Image (cartoon, rainbow, N blue to C red; front, side, top):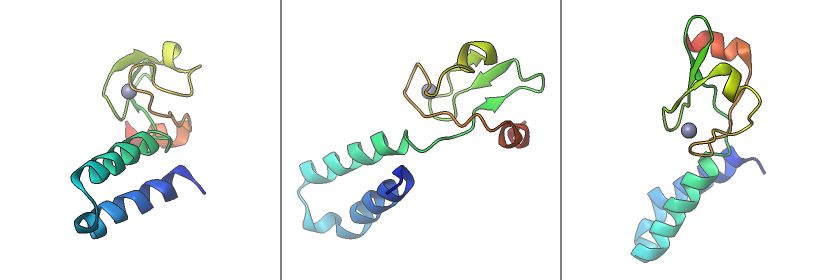
Length: 91
Ligand SMILES: [Zn+2]
């Protein structure tokens, strides 16, 4: 099972079955969904020169050099997708 699939299932449970659970349980599911969502790789936002990258989750700014060796944003823990073709589309 992929992180995206887990996230989709958690969000569906929260949206459709919220009335079945206590507020604490729904808050726990929402927390879990946020944690799992960070495991779904997202491409950073880059400037035209590809020297600066912005985390797609927390919008922290890094030099591409600093972030390029990291699989996760050091600020928020978002998994980074370093597919440069996708990054080029985000510019
Ligand atoms: Zn981040």
